[in-house]
Length: 394
Ligand code: FAD
Image 1 (spheres, protein in one colour):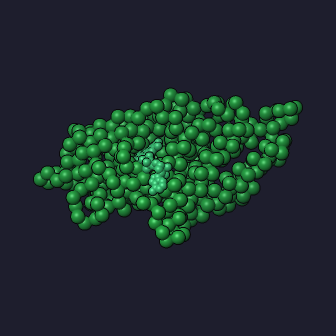
Image 2 (cartoon, helix red, strand yellow):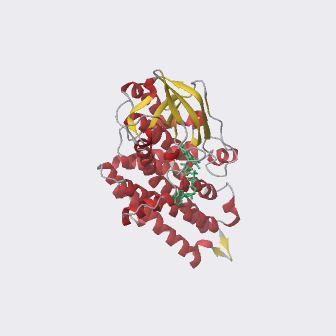
Image 3 (cartoon, helix red, strand yellow):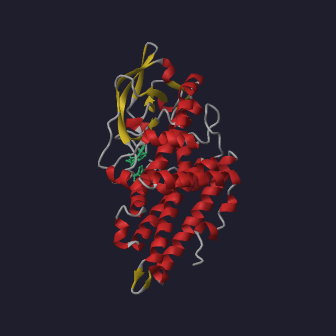
């Protein structure tokens, strides 16, 4: 047949630079060779060989990809985006590993850390030798992190941290946790500060969270800080208030704008291939008008979602992107991706409910993606505030 891809229909590839296309192809091939043969088993077993994969992702240049210096690859934001897209085309859990390491943990140290903190952690994190996590959310404070109860108190020159963080990606496998806590420093709203916590510090533990039905190929943990004593040098010197963690979250959200479209594309390609080979009532499912209506409508959203991602990538490359624009991309692309995953599931019939095909795995994963990095509702409120000038968060 002369079937085209969505990329051809929308002429998407000419929008990327040759270097970005090369990175896209390299990461896509890594997915085919190294990840796709195992991902359904990892999801079913609820585990991910994080340390092994981190070393391989580090060799690929995917960790801290858009950061400069300290052994980081220093690529463009768009290049980072297309890498996220290819990783999430395999599984949102793999892209989460890379987002948390590069955009949350490494970015925080790179942007707000002391020279000593950067030298100590970034080169080893870029190779994947050291793993990081990012602890902001607490059991009682997700969308409203300003209310956090985790606190850091001065004791002589030291800091002593107490509190509990929840839903922390890579928590149990991390060597270093960037932990956000209330302090009595008066120079910022609520005195929130970031701390670089080696996870072997006495009083730190990270029990893994089980029984998840989404992002099963990803490690999610609680962080328990019980009188964790740190030297004065453990605080990130240049992050005062919520601006620190919120800026880092903006970085990771940016990757999700691309990544979610990778998951959507993988679902649509799977559904089209299935419809072409599956015969119902004596002819291929792809030849029925209802199927084609579904496929055409999904292709429009996949194509438009790519255009939005690439456009926002260029804005970020030029240093012009705003938080409201990141919210726009995250809200739209994740919401469309999950709708596409569910629609594709219908085309696969009963086969669609199994791990033999990636579709229900993507759909379930995208439930987490809809919630983390700012829920859809929080992004609606952000966009609503931008357009009306009225804050409706409280
Ligand atoms: P809540 O904030 O309690 O929200 C519940 C509902 O209320 C949502 O629908 C929300 O949109 C809605 N809501 C909230 N505020 C408003 C409002 N003002 N108006 C109207 N509706 C509102 N966190 C980290 O710090 N680090 C991580 O690495 C990390 N990894 C994660 C991995 C997974 C798999 C998951 C599921 C979560 C992860 N999170 C992480 C936590 C995530 O960021 C939070 O779950 C998210 O911020 C939402 O918080 P919550 O779950 O407490 O929901």
